[in-house]
Image 1 (tube, rainbow, N blue to C red):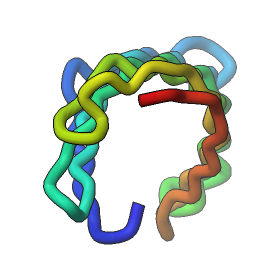
Image 2: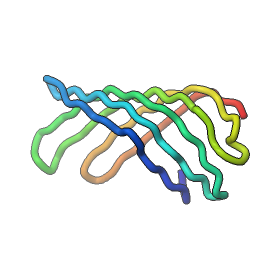
Image 3: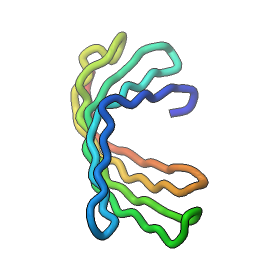
Image 4: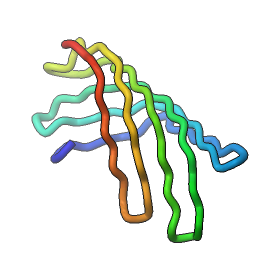
Length: 100
């Protein structure tokens, strides 16, 4: 989202053997127009650590929209995201179905 803000609440990550990562939490996303929408998420991923400054994380996340303000007041739906993070930044692609 360009020009928006994302706030994380209840974010928890749990590292397990073989560099697996599991997490869950909530996100609050503020749109450029000032409206917000909220969703619950869960993720699983794989952490690759070839060196302290050359790591990579690939994650799959499911999301469930739970509400918002303004035009997003009655948002409902689900989606999935694929995410890749490195020391240089993070790229995320999401798709899903929702209604207002």
